[in-house]
Image 1 (cartoon, rainbow, N blue to C red):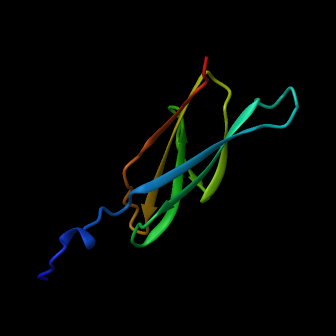
Image 2: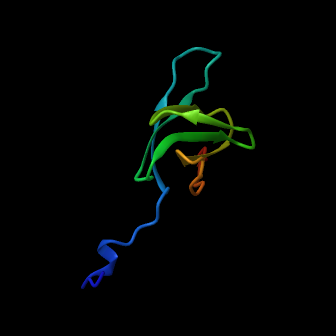
Length: 100
């Protein structure tokens, strides 16, 4: 299709955008002091689900909004989208470090 501005129609499918807000947790000794409250969005065609992987753990289904406990000095997780054909998208790494 001839078009003057090709960048207006070019896109990469299955890419997720992750937004993170750090909030204090409950004042219980069993809970971490802070949590990463996350929201993800994607324009994945034939979208099926989001998946979350904490550290080196396994992939698990995740909601569009979720919270991750921040127990360590460095906390890492990945999020990806999956379509109806079980094709997974890129796996962006989110790394949250305790300042100091």
